[in-house]
Length: 231
Image (cartoon, rainbow, N blue to C red; front, top):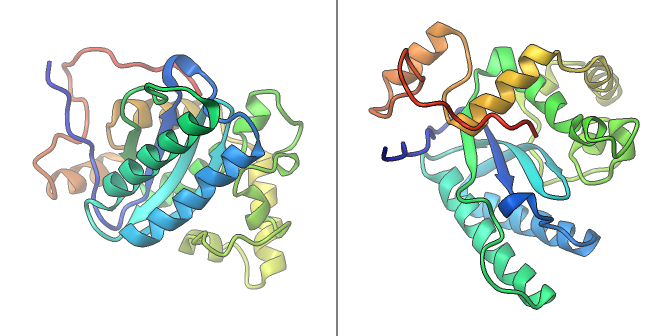
């Protein structure tokens, strides 16, 4: 069965997952992680993609993005992926593939899932047992949104601005939201939708998306199973 093209539309938040081949490490040290962030910053700006949230794990990464153009995310991810592999292979004296095929992604309904997706991304290191609290992990956007440090290239979504009238109020409200966690149903929905490529949201949202693209946006009643390995 031919694989579907990625679902990507301007103006909608996209949850992106990129994993190492056979779950191998894609970062050896902090220099590698910083290089990936530098590439992300550069190519997001070039392609008109807003980066709302990210986390870099040992063998995969998550991004929450809103492109200004339909081809913004694919072009950005292609540039980041290729540039990083060239860098990583040269530094490690290796050759060949690094990524587990193409990146996975889908569109999510803003009002229902965007803040949940940010919390889900922040909590990845906690779920993996790497840290006790998301604020203890240095390679995610969590620290920016709780006021620990500033990453000016990140774009806070309007829903984040709505969390408080002052920076302190927003940071405190966001920290509390992440601390409250993401329930198992939402976590599974965010994982499986990104890995499968089917849009995540209420029926009205999905139906509205379908009117904007010839690419099928949800599974329907038939179809082969997809990879639901959790991240």
